[in-house]
Length: 427
Image (cartoon, rainbow, N blue to C red; front, top):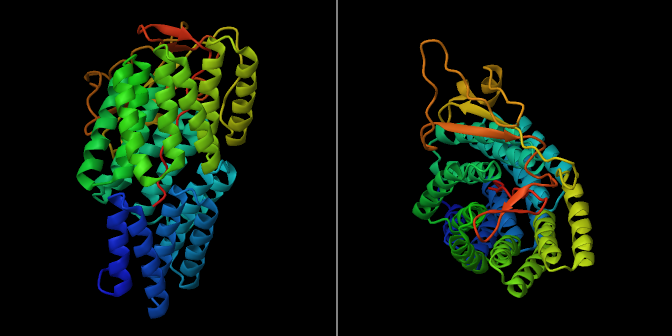
């Protein structure tokens, strides 16, 4: 967005390079230098972008209050120079910050305004669509989430933004984990990690690892889940991102819980809660509290379990996530939705429903019939063709009788379905 040439632009470029390489103190220093130089030279466009990007770094450093102030400054500068794209970028970032703080309606309004101002920009639309998918993901509206993620990938690919597509792939991997389509989740996470490593984006690498670990966890591959979670934790520790460290500690605690090490599990999960609280991450706090409640229940500490479940329910309620609704019989209704190539909106989720994907009475999905003269679509990897399922009630509902894997590879009936922790496009 910025042409290198001035001192401010050069500092901004250096800051972005340092940030991706996880050299956070140096990145902050370069962003601050870019802001000072842009103010001195009257380069308002660079000033707006530097303020917004510094806000993202401060947010990951758990300085959310300062982050919001810097982002608001960036927005005001963009409005002042009548640059709708920069203003929309700032609104999108403000929405992403609001999501992490649990202010879902505020986030939705920021994203709506961002599309109004800058929706003609494919780069901006890609990020906003991804973030709208995150909101749907949190609410358990997986079909809507998939539609937003597909539109995001379409826009990213139209602008040859491979790195942006990798962020959407992470979230598609999360959706497929929620739907228990683990081979598909593996494909998306692996593809995203490959791109993140090539781009040198440490934070994205960590997000790929910690979310892929969850897919391994649900397959009973506990050693692989632990290894990936610890690798992610090392990255997040270097970045000093407490919210992300909370996610990694939670995953490690879950592995210890399922492998019969309750003391270690409790220690890691309580650390996860503390980190989430200190970072102001409502979603991570709710998830960690819920997972710790399962441990307390298994240990016979029922009062502690009840207290933690009440806490989780209250926090999920703030996010408008669908949780804690008991039912006599938990029945997962799955719709097999055929989706066209990434970036091809002609075969989206809506069309799959219209074309007659049906659900059998026992809750399993009926195989779609091919069109006359055609053959059923083959399921292949994310670079070619995608397939998506929808889970009735949403991935975030706590359903009595829902199954979780245990350390023997079977299913432990904990009555909880995991809530997704998708990745926002703050930049």
